[in-house]
Length: 157
Image (cartoon, rainbow, N blue to C red; front, side):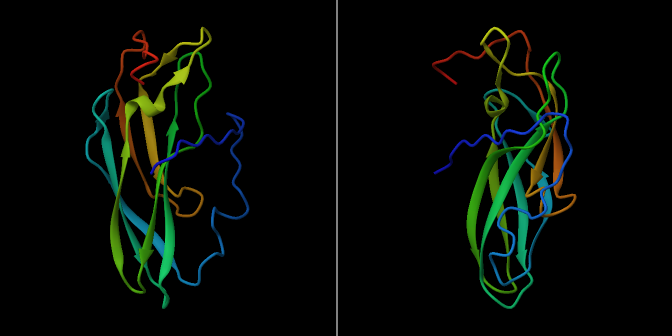
């Protein structure tokens, strides 16, 4: 089951935690690579699947949490998001093996409440990053396509 989680941090502060999420909880070296997206555009009703290769380079089996975070760089009149957890998967990875993990992203997941307490989606480039505080440059960009004047209804989204 997937759970929605919000991590609040100041919009214009670019800091990095000293230790990555889950740092030091395993005895193997695990890396993520080759992030690909199923489409170049993300629109309401048309989710995009992000796939990533996870490799255990160490001598021991490892249970790894693969996190997908998004960063929306621009919102007209609103503070952009830094990184926000959108999906995750826990996998068991034997020593020396690789697995491909698929995580889904919906445009509706990027909706926010405006000043008039209406939910909307702002079109903008969105960076999809896998464990961004752990692995450098394991990301891809998708263009969020939506009409900023169309509001999301409460019942359907």
